[in-house]
Image 1 (tube, rainbow, N blue to C red):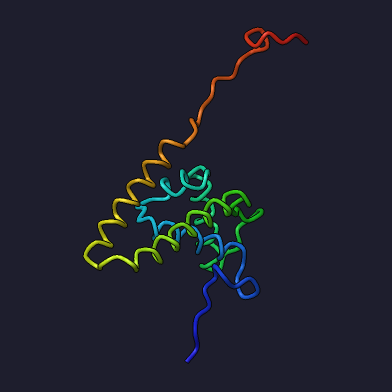
Image 2: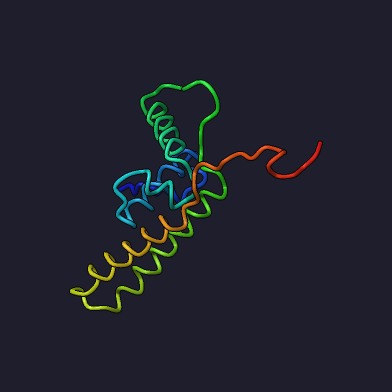
Amino acid sequence: MTTTKDPLFTIFDSTELERDIALMDRVKEKFELKSDSGLARMIGAHKSVLSEIRSYAKSVANGNTPEGKARTLTALQRLRAFNHLGYAWARDALMAAFPEAVREELRKSDNERTHANVVDAAEPRRTKVRSKAQTGTVS
């Protein structure tokens, strides 16, 4: 019997792209996110970046080698994703202390709280550029 290795935890038998996809999928699964836009807010990325990563991975999986450098998560985005994933794993371990009937309701309410916190903490995407005259700086 051969066991499949989890790309999230195998450095030598997986690529950076495979690890990023596994990390993204695992966070989405643990927090029951329906789309990459929620994941993007959680890890501080734009949803188009996640789309580019998935598109590149799909091309590679189909045997095509796209031109240019592979798009991957930044170190900070990975750190944020692992931070959320670590929280979810600790939460799951703690949930084992509660009766089965209560666990799902606790998990659901915690995911709702997490989603609300992520939306509240999301920085505005667009900022108004101020001219030198408005800021009072002189060249």
